[in-house]
Amino acid sequence: MPSERSGKNPNWESEELIYYDFDTLWTYFQAYEHLVGVDGADEAACVARELVDIWRWEHFMPDARSENYNGRVWVR
Image 1 (tube, rainbow, N blue to C red):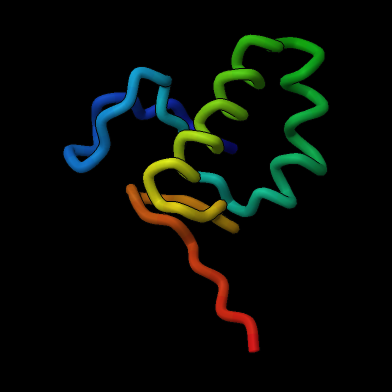
Image 2 (image 1 turned 90 degrees about the vertical axis):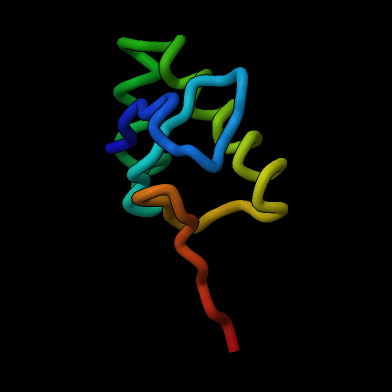
């Protein structure tokens, strides 16, 4: 479950709220996003904007993100 960690990464400056600790994006959108969309649409929008922000900084979309770093997937 993503956690809001704005201001806790010294290497990251953004005007958006920062969410980390995505186990995997597949799990997030398969299970958690449905619950957040019903109860907390603002939080769901913040998480989506954070994913776009990750793409801007890292130049690719992560499979997972934890402890200030993307989970990089190696594909043969």
